[in-house]
Image (cartoon, rainbow, N blue to C red; front, side, top):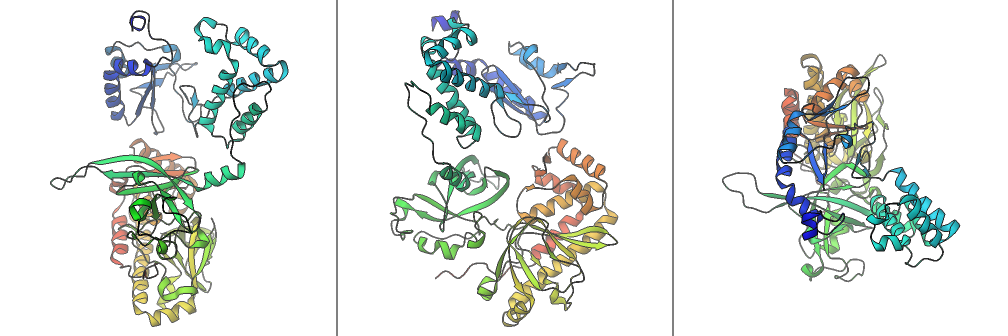
Length: 574
């Protein structure tokens, strides 16, 4: 402690993180409050401070570039005052401002699209292994210390004497950042295993087929758990954390008990913009001693929960019915069996599976797939499970969208009015899955089941109201209101806060100029309502976005809410 007090703490010492947190405690609090005021995020690693934002422009009050020939970073007075008031001094030479189009590096890591290491780091590993392969371990170690690490006095004896541990440490770090499935990392790890005269063991790598299977079958969970009681109608005290789940063929998703809560969302790491609500359906393992065995496995082999996407729950002791009765998803579309849970906003008609049975034909909805053409005979009725369908009016070579149909929606139910020709063009906007049934078959079913006919009528009335209201909205309401209304309706239809749409598409379906759409979306982003990514819009402040929407959104939502959904996708559980 005497050396740490008088001469400073050794770099990389065990006390460094603790001491830095103690010294910067007040600074962290003040900078966090300042950044929240400007809708930014504050992070610190030792003495490296990073301020980030999802907005298109960085807050000028915190930092900006001057307008000279060679732009220079100007730190805002308010930010500088907070840092200097805590007895810290800015290092102007290391301060920089990086936009989305530039390489964003934080503590030696690239954080633009995905986490990565700089190219120089990979080149250094290759150079070290090349020297080892060509000259041997001893000569490569000597060259490394004399040519690349001249400040030998700053190195520990372990680093000076063991070149192999230095190389292995770099590979371990690369593996933790990229993962061994990445081609660059995997090639370097295999190359290290073939180095001669090694003192340490080889890297244990899974077969590539097993890695791909693990990657495709592993999902991320976002969990909200209520940790406090609700007092006087106030919001409950919540705890937010993350976990993982894995997909078992013919079983569903399984996770551990501590990775569950009152509210859960699941997404795949490769498709983070597609999130779905899930719920628990059955408990396995010690807590379910009376439950049946799954596929002959011991109850102790699988401990955790199955996760259902239907919104219904199964009690303990019903695991033998999970696969067929719960129906994580139709088995043909287990990709990997994700079906969004219906919410109050999204309570639409669902496929009449108990009444129709084998008459339903499962299909996959591909992007830009045309389900119906205008002035053509309606041959099938489609019940949408996942994805989004755009209902359009096409005339004179132009197109205008009148409605969007998503989860629990129906395409082609207009035959109930007695017409045989389609009045709209139905095009798949987001890929997904659906059921379809020939119109003649459905006519026979609704004669036998009047409640299905009633529910379909109510849905078609709500859909017709949306089409009419959309036409009125285009005449009476401004661009900002229409765009906010469309975003809210589309989120309701897919039951997710992320929409993979472009500015061009929004301008075409709404009949607006692209420049106007871009300008409006920038305003939404500056207010923190949405976040724009490449080909994706994410809704961050749903309630505030609804306030920006016109009255048409509430009217359309009310029309759909009034249509009761008495048809169940589930088979009766015995």
